[in-house]
Image 1: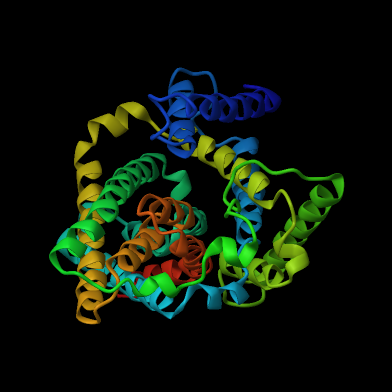
Image 2: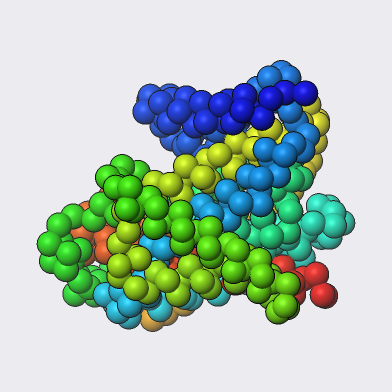
Length: 383
């Protein structure tokens, strides 16, 4: 039996290796999240660490993953949403509705209950969550339905998600410019708040580098572990999923600025998610995954259909309402890729006035995604 400390050493080292690799040109666009899954999967299939459940893996699923999700949600202060402006907020919500419709259409088109199997509803919930506001919701819903332990299904879904998200960044970067030339719109979003004007400095809230003190660390640990304990107790007496209770507690605490501004929450949260994803990689049977190309194709097709439906609804209705094409592109990217990629898109479009709104609607997606994902999953399970 492999020593638990050795397993933790390998998982931690993999995060270091993947972070280092992502600074290199050939790996930069893969991203740490996907790379850490791949590296750990290779090591596990070579026999370096176990590919089956161990006390270490169970602890990470039960405690570290919820703790990381809790920390990442502490950055969501809903009071800031008024700074996003009505055009961006309304188009983001329209895009979220488009995502739900797209998921339901893709489940029907691909007969997901037959083609994917008994976890089809959970997968639909994961896609709903991640295409409402980013990968935090993807992992939260997967954790709730134990899809995380269905190694090959989770890996295939993650790979397809990463491919479509990357392609969609290219679409949202080029489409607003092409549409503006063909169907000119007044740039109404120029009146939206400028991030620098509001904060006095450029947005850096989504940097992976933070400085923290023992006070910050102790408070984050106390809040996170306490919230997990309270959520576990409440989940035994009320008919509400543990992950939704934890999400609600995190969002409630995040409305207090003293908590919302705690240093280190994103840093620790990201590290916890990377360790969690490393364990996902360990559960992956590479030989079985490679042999099941049909599953990967179905998942890729489902995501493609749902994103196209989302885009059709958002850009179609947005066009009828004569919305700024850049606002539509950033709102869509906030749905599909989350805050970080929406911010990057606003920068790439040369729209500093959209940077803060991009981040704010993306954080709203972090708040809504898990609720919406579990709602859609339960709706399909009951159907």
